[in-house]
Amino acid sequence: MTPLGRLRLGINIDHVATIRNARGGALPDPLRAAFLAEAAGADGITAHLREDRRHIRDSDIEALVAGISVPLNFECAATSEMQAIALRHKPHAICLVPEKREERTTEGGLDVAGDETRLAAFIAPLRDAGCRVSMFIGHEARQIEASAKIGAAVVELHTGRYCDLIAEGQTDAAAAELEALRLGATHAHSLGLEVHMGHGLDFETATHVAVFPEVVELNIGHFLIGEAVFRGLGPAIEEMRRRIDCARNGTQSA
Ligand code: PXP
Image (cartoon, rainbow, N blue to C red; front, side, top):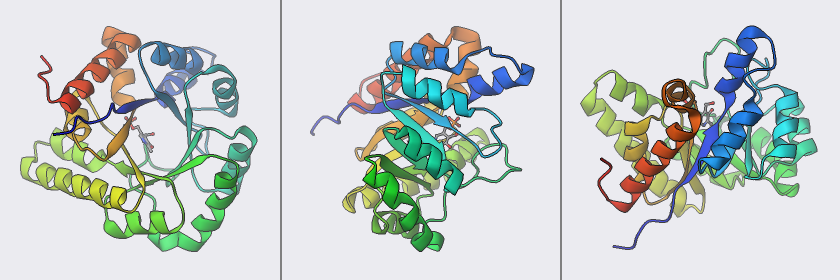
């Protein structure tokens, strides 16, 4: 068996900004979290600038672009405002997500198949600017195929439903969802797309998807920021790194 390549670990720092914004001041500083994440072995930093600016602010994106030395994965909705911001900063990667004002987090994947023409036109200038454009989608074949058709470089498959099923103890449904994610990763890879996964992942669920050979990057936020309260951000990320590496290498993660 060929050894699997090292999985990239992207750390989503949105929830450091959520805590900061709860008090309206400057602390805790998401940029400091990004520096700590880098020092702990993060391969990238993810930040989602939502339309309502509920966590990450425009000034955070500016500080990240200027300050971090690992790639920035800029998450946003496919709106003209976000396109202009993305084109101004030209981050390494741009991950397009669906956004509803009333949702607590990104609840489902982007409907690429239902919005092909608009999204193809939307991503063209981002690609021309040299950014890797990623579609945050479910594992359905039609969404994967539409992402390939419109010229996305990457798909990030939404693991939220899988993680919810695990949390609810719905073992059979979780196993079926995990298999669908696996097949989705294989399908996307066969179409030339780079495959990422993310949303809701924790120490356990991350190791279940880390073993898929086609997956090259995981993006993880909420669980690690929560875990940081108890063990510190650096140690939480290092533990995640260790566990996904062990899963990937087929070694024991005691
Ligand atoms: N990937 C994408 C595209 C997301 O929207 C999010 C949540 O903002 C994540 C990964 C990280 O999810 P979580 O915070 O649940 O780990």
